[in-house]
Length: 136
Image (tube, rainbow, N blue to C red; front, side):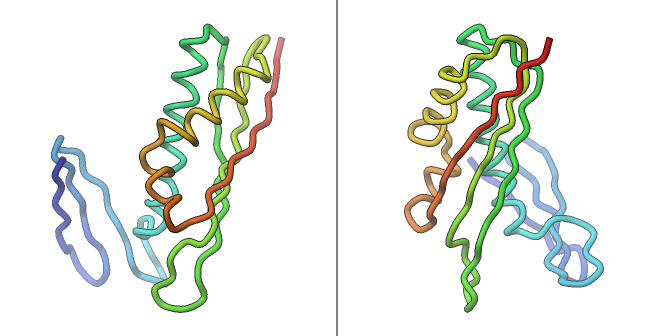
């Protein structure tokens, strides 16, 4: 896997993945126009885990209609301001969803599949929780 990051101006950069997708990063504290690199890391953990959870539930033939993960984090007060804690809370919505299946999907993502959050667990306390919302 490869990528490039190019400076645009001020503290704004554009990253381009090896597959050709582009994303803007903004390191400006005031008047930013895009997520900061640390926000992107946080959102990447959520996106990676969400892909796993939805995929696992679909393979289990669960009727998933929506999955939203809320991420909260704490950072060190001194430089470098690394993440010290990240919590992922999944709200999974669907019809006749099994709480056991959702719990299993979140656990498998956390322990086995999500490359981003598993990579972070070496230096960050990463925790997970979930809510099941069954609709008619």
